[in-house]
Length: 204
Image 1 (cartoon, rainbow, N blue to C red):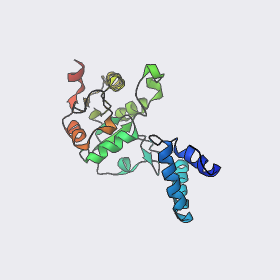
Image 2: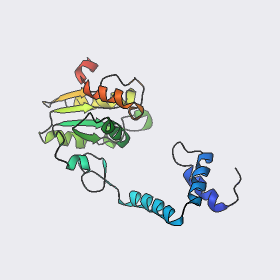
Image 3: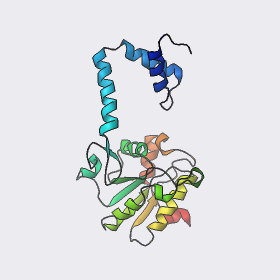
Image 4: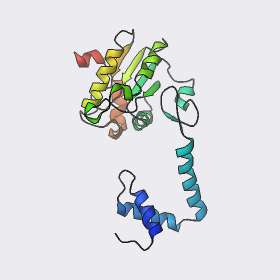
C-alpha cells in the first residue's frame, strides 16, 4: 500500500501490529482518528498511556488491577474457599461474563508447554500452592483450555495438590477438546462451570 504521508504510514504500521488488525483495518482506524477532534484523540492516547504505565497485577491472583488487590479479591461477597484456575486474564473475563461463578480466581499466566520452552517455574503455580497453604481453600476448579497443554498443566497442579485435603475439579467437557476457553460461548461455559467434575474422574 502507498500512503500520502509518512506520519499516516507510521500510525498504520503501529495499528497493524495489533492482533487481528491488517493494513486495511489499520487504515480505517487511522483515518477515523484523523477526522476526530484533537481533544478526543488526546483522550484516546492518554487512556492507552495510563493503562500501560499505571496498570498493576493483583498480588493475590495476578488479575489486572488499578491497585494492589483486584476488585474480585478485595470484595467480601465472593466465596473465599473456591479458586478457579485460568490460563490468562481473557479467560477470567470470559468466566466472569457468565455470571455463574462467585468464587475467587488464580491466573497462571500461561500453560505448561515444553515445545515452546514453557515450564512450571515460568507460571504462577507456586503462588497458587501458597494460597492453598493458608488453609482457607476447599476447592480448586481447573478451568483451562481443553487441549494437550491445558491437560498437562491441570495434571501437574493436581499432583502438587495431592497431599492437601481439598477437592480438585475441572470444568465439564461442554468445552470441545482442542477449543480455546475465551472463544467458548457464555452458556456453554456457564454449564461447564456448574457441571464441573472431580479431576480424579478424568485422570483415572
